[in-house]
Amino acid sequence: QMTLAESGGGLVQAGGSLRLSCAASGRTISDRGMGWYRQTPGTQREWVATTTKDNRPDYADSVKGRFTISRDNAKNMIYLQMNSLKPEDTAVYFCTSTTGYQYWGQGTQVTVSP
Image (cartoon, helix red, strand yellow):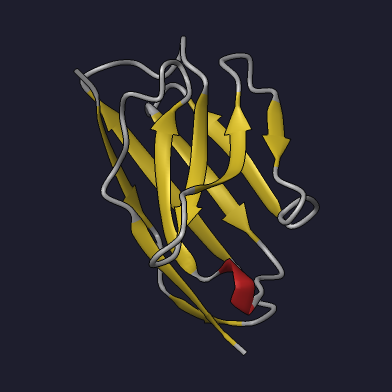
């Protein structure tokens, strides 16, 4: 019913910035909570940030003050602005609908070099 597609990942030096995008299709995001998770090989998928349908954000302690989640309902997209990146942020980043957690994208790789 819903398809999500992440983009914007890449290789960046520590201290740099990246902006991830997630394009949704099939269903509108306007009445859904949305979020970002990340995962490294052999680890459980980790919560990064969420935003409610009313655009109220929440963040994991590890990214507070550095990452910003936002949504553009007109474009049916969500974003993750990542500043002051650290090597520990290296992971595959996924977006999801937090209204049921039924839909996930393919992920986009973020690599932060020291």
